[in-house]
Length: 367
Ligand SMILES: Cc1cc2nc3c(=O)[nH]c(=O)nc-3n(C[C@H](O)[C@H](O)[C@H](O)COP(=O)(O)OP(=O)(O)OC[C@H]3O[C@@H](n4cnc5c(N)ncnc54)[C@H](O)[C@@H]3O)c2cc1C
Image 1: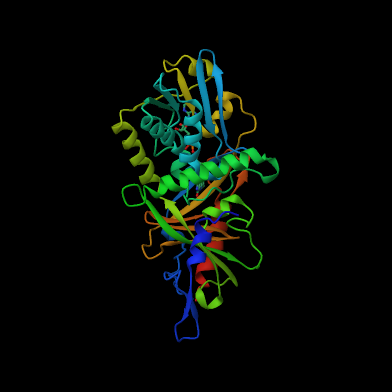
Image 2: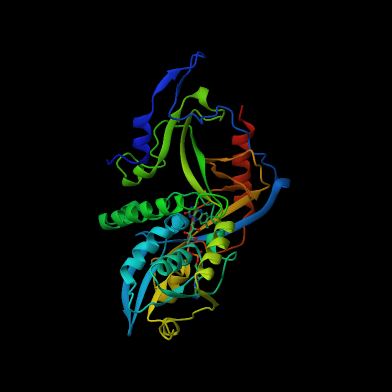
């Protein structure tokens, strides 16, 4: 495996004694042994969110095809990793389809994928018009957690080696691009994740032989003295977090400031797309691509979230069998349902109760 971000960090680490019987690794001086718990109670819920991940078992689709005289470039189907991968697949799509001699481009869709595609096109000199049925805050992208990690994007037994290479290329580009936006302006920050388990063997967040492992930062398995979770096996690693409401609002401002027009419009069929004045059209319609372009593989994977009042002291994430907790500044996100083929946007009270009870169990047992 190439020496990735994580490999470099651990190769630089050294240890020294602290006189308390513990050996601390000076490569991870931010290790806290007592984390503040989340207060999980029904009266702290500020909203319930339900969203449909646009999932394709064989992975996202970036492809170019002719549409009569026009060029159509698909960029959709990112499953549970579309915020993460948006800049990366936008780069693949723009490389594939942008022709500087025909700078007028249409982007269909105004979620994370459409907005990143529009920005990269503008950076290449394109004149962009975005067409979308829904704008932020009413997109699936607004619902996302959103941890920067390309997970739940494909079924391992359905992808080709070529796709795995493309997935890594997209993730690598996006990883760098998001780092250039860390800070309050875009609502992007680095946070520590704790993967909690009752079993020792775990390949989460990435197996040693997975190329994506190179993008895991600061991964360490903690000893019981190094954490206050009730689980015997705790692995920490760091990822960026994207506060989607703020990030998408800012992205929309960026594309408008760079000259894009945004047209609210729903397309009923391909003929309406083909009739657009632009010669090059980027399809970033997420789950909507299924009906619009006849993709029978794409399906919803429903996710339900309970959002609790913010707790500024909770600036970390947990991932466990019971679900995940993201300690965002705009609220504590409790989630963890992955319901294939489920189209309803109505919350299921029993699922929300399970998420609440599971997390209550974790945080009330913290010592
Ligand atoms: C609960 C949950 C948690 C998630 N957590 C994470 C996470 O932690 N990290 C992560 O990276 N990802 C996460 N995701 C996944 C992520 O939200 C999606 O992969 C991503 O939002 C897809 O972006 P998109 O721009 O393709 O789609 P969308 O945000 O759905 O945008 C599609 C756009 O196309 C438009 N459109 C669709 N059909 C038409 C039509 N016929 N005519 C006109 N316009 C149309 C829509 O109106 C919209 O503007 C999560 C998703 C959910 C539901």
